[in-house]
Image (cartoon, rainbow, N blue to C red):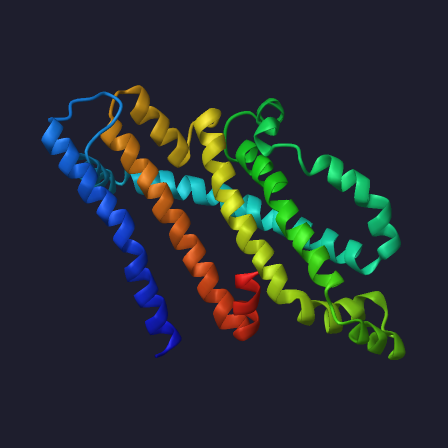
Length: 260
Protein backbone atom coordinates (compact mmCIF):
# COMPACT_ATOMS: atom_id res chain seq x y z
CA UNK A 1 0.00 0.00 0.00
CA UNK A 2 1.35 3.45 -0.95
CA UNK A 3 2.13 6.19 1.55
CA UNK A 4 -0.67 8.31 0.03
CA UNK A 5 -3.21 5.52 0.58
CA UNK A 6 -2.02 5.12 4.18
CA UNK A 7 -2.45 8.84 4.84
CA UNK A 8 -5.96 8.85 3.38
CA UNK A 9 -6.91 5.80 5.44
CA UNK A 10 -5.51 7.35 8.63
CA UNK A 11 -7.36 10.59 7.88
CA UNK A 12 -10.64 8.72 7.42
CA UNK A 13 -10.12 6.85 10.69
CA UNK A 14 -9.21 10.08 12.47
CA UNK A 15 -12.44 11.76 11.33
CA UNK A 16 -14.62 9.09 12.95
CA UNK A 17 -14.27 10.49 16.48
CA UNK A 18 -15.00 14.21 15.79
CA UNK A 19 -17.92 13.39 13.49
CA UNK A 20 -19.26 11.00 16.10
CA UNK A 21 -19.11 13.77 18.71
CA UNK A 22 -20.96 16.12 16.37
CA UNK A 23 -23.73 13.58 15.83
CA UNK A 24 -24.07 13.04 19.58
CA UNK A 25 -24.12 16.82 20.21
CA UNK A 26 -26.77 17.32 17.53
CA UNK A 27 -28.90 14.52 18.96
CA UNK A 28 -28.67 15.97 22.48
CA UNK A 29 -29.56 19.46 21.21
CA UNK A 30 -32.65 18.14 19.42
CA UNK A 31 -33.67 15.99 22.39
CA UNK A 32 -33.29 18.84 24.92
CA UNK A 33 -34.78 21.56 22.64
CA UNK A 34 -31.63 23.61 23.24
CA UNK A 35 -32.16 27.38 23.56
CA UNK A 36 -29.07 29.21 24.79
CA UNK A 37 -27.15 32.47 24.39
CA UNK A 38 -23.82 30.75 25.03
CA UNK A 39 -23.90 27.59 22.92
CA UNK A 40 -25.48 26.41 19.67
CA UNK A 41 -26.19 23.00 18.11
CA UNK A 42 -23.93 21.79 15.28
CA UNK A 43 -26.50 22.42 12.53
CA UNK A 44 -26.80 26.11 13.48
CA UNK A 45 -23.00 26.42 13.70
CA UNK A 46 -22.72 24.92 10.21
CA UNK A 47 -25.36 27.29 8.86
CA UNK A 48 -23.69 30.35 10.42
CA UNK A 49 -20.30 29.29 9.08
CA UNK A 50 -21.69 28.75 5.58
CA UNK A 51 -23.31 32.21 5.61
CA UNK A 52 -20.04 33.77 6.79
CA UNK A 53 -18.27 32.05 3.89
CA UNK A 54 -20.83 33.29 1.39
CA UNK A 55 -20.67 36.92 2.52
CA UNK A 56 -16.86 36.77 2.65
CA UNK A 57 -16.52 37.96 6.25
CA UNK A 58 -14.77 34.83 7.49
CA UNK A 59 -12.47 34.79 4.46
CA UNK A 60 -11.44 38.42 5.01
CA UNK A 61 -10.80 37.66 8.69
CA UNK A 62 -8.75 34.62 7.68
CA UNK A 63 -6.65 36.73 5.33
CA UNK A 64 -6.00 39.30 8.08
CA UNK A 65 -4.91 36.61 10.53
CA UNK A 66 -2.69 34.77 8.05
CA UNK A 67 -1.01 37.98 6.89
CA UNK A 68 0.02 38.76 10.47
CA UNK A 69 0.92 35.15 11.29
CA UNK A 70 3.00 34.53 8.16
CA UNK A 71 4.75 37.90 8.34
CA UNK A 72 5.71 37.31 11.95
CA UNK A 73 6.72 33.72 11.15
CA UNK A 74 8.97 34.85 8.28
CA UNK A 75 10.76 37.44 10.42
CA UNK A 76 10.88 35.40 13.63
CA UNK A 77 11.86 32.20 11.82
CA UNK A 78 14.64 34.02 9.99
CA UNK A 79 15.96 35.52 13.23
CA UNK A 80 15.73 32.16 15.00
CA UNK A 81 17.49 30.35 12.15
CA UNK A 82 20.34 32.88 11.97
CA UNK A 83 20.82 32.96 15.74
CA UNK A 84 20.63 29.15 15.96
CA UNK A 85 23.25 28.72 13.24
CA UNK A 86 25.61 31.20 14.88
CA UNK A 87 25.21 29.76 18.37
CA UNK A 88 25.35 26.18 17.16
CA UNK A 89 28.61 26.66 15.28
CA UNK A 90 30.35 28.85 17.88
CA UNK A 91 30.26 26.88 21.17
CA UNK A 92 31.88 29.67 23.20
CA UNK A 93 29.19 32.16 22.17
CA UNK A 94 26.53 29.53 22.81
CA UNK A 95 27.71 29.10 26.40
CA UNK A 96 27.86 32.87 26.92
CA UNK A 97 24.30 33.36 25.65
CA UNK A 98 22.78 30.34 27.42
CA UNK A 99 21.58 32.26 30.49
CA UNK A 100 20.17 35.19 28.48
CA UNK A 101 18.22 32.89 26.16
CA UNK A 102 16.80 30.78 28.96
CA UNK A 103 15.84 33.92 30.92
CA UNK A 104 13.99 35.58 28.03
CA UNK A 105 12.48 32.54 26.29
CA UNK A 106 9.95 31.63 29.05
CA UNK A 107 8.32 35.08 28.90
CA UNK A 108 4.76 34.49 27.60
CA UNK A 109 4.32 36.18 24.24
CA UNK A 110 0.90 37.48 25.27
CA UNK A 111 2.59 39.44 28.07
CA UNK A 112 4.15 41.59 25.34
CA UNK A 113 0.79 42.64 23.91
CA UNK A 114 0.46 45.78 26.12
CA UNK A 115 4.01 46.85 25.23
CA UNK A 116 3.47 46.23 21.51
CA UNK A 117 0.18 48.10 21.72
CA UNK A 118 1.91 51.14 23.24
CA UNK A 119 4.67 51.08 20.63
CA UNK A 120 2.70 50.26 17.46
CA UNK A 121 -0.97 50.89 18.30
CA UNK A 122 -3.71 48.76 16.77
CA UNK A 123 -3.10 46.98 13.48
CA UNK A 124 -0.80 44.54 11.77
CA UNK A 125 2.47 45.86 13.19
CA UNK A 126 1.48 45.22 16.79
CA UNK A 127 0.33 41.69 16.04
CA UNK A 128 3.37 40.89 13.89
CA UNK A 129 5.74 42.08 16.62
CA UNK A 130 4.25 39.68 19.15
CA UNK A 131 4.25 36.80 16.63
CA UNK A 132 7.92 37.48 15.84
CA UNK A 133 8.86 37.04 19.48
CA UNK A 134 6.85 33.83 19.83
CA UNK A 135 7.99 32.17 16.61
CA UNK A 136 11.70 32.86 17.06
CA UNK A 137 12.27 30.37 19.87
CA UNK A 138 11.15 27.05 18.32
CA UNK A 139 13.39 27.63 15.30
CA UNK A 140 16.33 28.81 17.39
CA UNK A 141 16.16 25.93 19.87
CA UNK A 142 15.72 23.20 17.26
CA UNK A 143 18.44 24.68 15.05
CA UNK A 144 20.90 24.56 17.95
CA UNK A 145 19.78 21.03 18.76
CA UNK A 146 20.10 19.92 15.14
CA UNK A 147 23.64 21.26 14.87
CA UNK A 148 24.61 19.58 18.15
CA UNK A 149 23.36 16.28 16.72
CA UNK A 150 25.48 16.42 13.55
CA UNK A 151 27.92 13.54 13.14
CA UNK A 152 31.26 14.79 14.60
CA UNK A 153 33.20 13.27 11.70
CA UNK A 154 31.49 15.68 9.32
CA UNK A 155 32.82 18.60 11.35
CA UNK A 156 36.27 17.02 11.32
CA UNK A 157 36.09 16.77 7.53
CA UNK A 158 35.20 20.47 7.34
CA UNK A 159 38.22 21.33 9.49
CA UNK A 160 40.48 19.09 7.43
CA UNK A 161 39.32 20.89 4.30
CA UNK A 162 39.93 24.23 6.07
CA UNK A 163 36.41 25.51 5.53
CA UNK A 164 35.68 28.91 7.01
CA UNK A 165 32.51 29.30 9.11
CA UNK A 166 30.34 30.28 6.14
CA UNK A 167 31.51 27.30 4.08
CA UNK A 168 31.05 25.01 7.07
CA UNK A 169 27.46 26.17 7.56
CA UNK A 170 26.54 26.05 3.87
CA UNK A 171 28.22 22.77 2.90
CA UNK A 172 28.09 20.71 6.11
CA UNK A 173 25.73 22.09 8.75
CA UNK A 174 22.67 23.04 6.71
CA UNK A 175 22.40 19.83 4.63
CA UNK A 176 22.76 17.68 7.76
CA UNK A 177 20.50 19.73 10.04
CA UNK A 178 17.80 20.91 7.63
CA UNK A 179 15.18 18.17 8.36
CA UNK A 180 15.10 19.04 12.05
CA UNK A 181 15.24 22.76 11.34
CA UNK A 182 12.14 22.35 9.19
CA UNK A 183 10.41 20.71 12.17
CA UNK A 184 11.22 23.89 14.08
CA UNK A 185 9.50 25.94 11.39
CA UNK A 186 6.46 23.64 11.59
CA UNK A 187 6.22 24.20 15.33
CA UNK A 188 6.75 27.93 14.88
CA UNK A 189 3.94 28.07 12.29
CA UNK A 190 1.48 26.61 14.79
CA UNK A 191 2.69 29.01 17.47
CA UNK A 192 2.37 31.95 15.06
CA UNK A 193 -1.27 31.13 14.31
CA UNK A 194 -2.13 30.68 18.00
CA UNK A 195 -0.47 33.94 19.03
CA UNK A 196 -2.03 35.88 16.15
CA UNK A 197 -5.53 34.76 17.13
CA UNK A 198 -4.78 35.50 20.80
CA UNK A 199 -3.71 39.06 19.93
CA UNK A 200 -6.93 39.55 18.00
CA UNK A 201 -9.07 38.24 20.84
CA UNK A 202 -7.40 40.38 23.49
CA UNK A 203 -6.41 43.61 21.77
CA UNK A 204 -6.31 43.84 17.98
CA UNK A 205 -9.56 44.64 16.10
CA UNK A 206 -9.00 42.45 13.04
CA UNK A 207 -8.82 38.81 12.03
CA UNK A 208 -10.45 35.59 13.17
CA UNK A 209 -9.99 36.23 16.88
CA UNK A 210 -11.73 39.59 16.66
CA UNK A 211 -14.55 38.10 14.58
CA UNK A 212 -15.08 35.45 17.22
CA UNK A 213 -15.18 38.06 19.98
CA UNK A 214 -17.67 40.23 18.09
CA UNK A 215 -19.94 37.23 17.56
CA UNK A 216 -19.78 36.43 21.27
CA UNK A 217 -20.52 40.00 22.33
CA UNK A 218 -23.49 40.22 19.94
CA UNK A 219 -24.93 36.99 21.42
CA UNK A 220 -24.44 34.86 18.30
CA UNK A 221 -22.99 31.63 19.72
CA UNK A 222 -23.52 29.86 16.41
CA UNK A 223 -21.24 32.30 14.58
CA UNK A 224 -18.77 32.35 17.47
CA UNK A 225 -18.45 28.57 17.35
CA UNK A 226 -18.26 28.67 13.55
CA UNK A 227 -15.23 30.94 13.83
CA UNK A 228 -13.71 28.59 16.41
CA UNK A 229 -14.18 25.55 14.18
CA UNK A 230 -12.80 27.46 11.20
CA UNK A 231 -9.67 28.39 13.16
CA UNK A 232 -9.13 24.69 13.82
CA UNK A 233 -9.62 23.89 10.12
CA UNK A 234 -7.11 26.59 9.12
CA UNK A 235 -4.55 25.27 11.62
CA UNK A 236 -5.07 21.69 10.44
CA UNK A 237 -4.69 22.72 6.80
CA UNK A 238 -1.53 24.69 7.54
CA UNK A 239 0.05 21.75 9.34
CA UNK A 240 -1.00 19.35 6.57
CA UNK A 241 0.68 21.55 3.95
CA UNK A 242 3.89 21.71 6.00
CA UNK A 243 3.95 17.97 6.69
CA UNK A 244 3.43 17.26 2.99
CA UNK A 245 6.25 19.67 2.08
CA UNK A 246 8.51 18.09 4.71
CA UNK A 247 7.92 14.57 3.40
CA UNK A 248 8.38 15.72 -0.20
CA UNK A 249 11.60 17.63 0.50
CA UNK A 250 13.32 15.26 2.90
CA UNK A 251 11.75 11.84 2.26
CA UNK A 252 12.63 9.23 4.93
CA UNK A 253 14.69 11.77 6.88
CA UNK A 254 11.64 14.00 7.13
CA UNK A 255 9.52 11.12 8.39
CA UNK A 256 12.07 10.30 11.09
CA UNK A 257 12.16 13.90 12.33
CA UNK A 258 8.34 14.03 12.29
CA UNK A 259 8.15 11.10 14.71
CA UNK A 260 10.64 12.57 17.18
